[in-house]
Length: 267
Length: 267
Image (cartoon, each protein chain N blue to C red):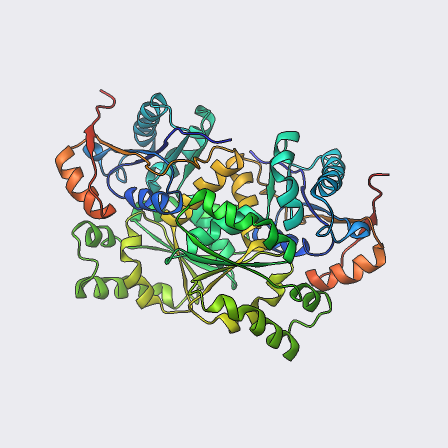
């Protein structure tokens, strides 16, 4: 048994492309539809009700394209609307927060876990809540790392500025004797080499994008919906913003040429 | 939403207890029912139809105890009956082969993966088939390691004999330039320190027990059946063999006192 339908992946902009890259790597026979809501990005400063409204508009569009699964590849939208989306739609919906939490629980030996993310994600406390829901005995240290997204978006990940900034922001977390650090923002995997260098060998980095792709694989496998006969998968990208700009930035993130179409939502 | 029902875990004997240990670690609020079919162990030399018959007898028993999920913590039984069990029962069923494969796909950078297991598991080729079903481009090297189970069952894991045997059996696989090695037998996690020493730092070890527990967490989470309010979980063990012997060996594997009841199956 298998399903040839595409996987639907969404984000407020480009960040979710790290999840796309991991789905391509770990599930190289799956077709993908991606929606980046660049016209209304960022979601972080908007009220949760508004984020949920945008989220359901995108999911409605993806469901109309007959996707077999939805991946909310955006921390803010996951925190705001994952549970309600699961009630609302019959296709399985997964977000980026739970997979990272679960992977950290599997990886930690000491039970001391760090979480870094945008200010909004850290303020939402969503990772700590999920970690404690599964295991109330864990010690969780949160740290907002505001400038990290800019370093990625401006392509500065391999610079002295990046090393200096990462070192400064991670210093408080280094005194907490964590053995596992969750990269709680879809942009951060692009900074992973610098973060690994700063944190040192004794700390396992949890890449939410990698873990989310893996959970997608689990859910499709258990529901017998993996696509296992598809040597030439198709990837389609939609943006609510400028298609040419998305083609340039998205192509750089994914290391491949992509075709981008415009989509109008809401209104 | 949550479910207070136990997770059902089964094996032909003691091997599945590594999965129990990982479920306790990663899902410390879940109740567990375990069945070890010690009276008919090992399954490895039996025809697949007979293994399936035993498997369904155990699952019938667990379903009658109202478990919310079945984990087939036995490579032989997974290879023989996972797909049919999924058709046959309405509770979700997961096995030990797919989680290990998926974790290896997530871990490998070079696409060169090794698999070690009992002769039966390696001869069944189940890991290679699952790896190639998801990604046909992977290079997979198999190696049967017959004496490893005895080293574990006779509590010889931290001995010179273990180091010598592991070195001899893994030598052929070391020339294959793998970067990821699947421990494709539920006994092998107890040998992991020696295997890690022999394989060296550049090879990631995939512990099937750890990965299976994690997939159980994923499946329960997505179906909203995690038990998240249970500080004093209950663990019940059943064996078709001698209860006192199971209590001794099982207690040693799990580093805790366990209560064991007798169960009669088939006949």
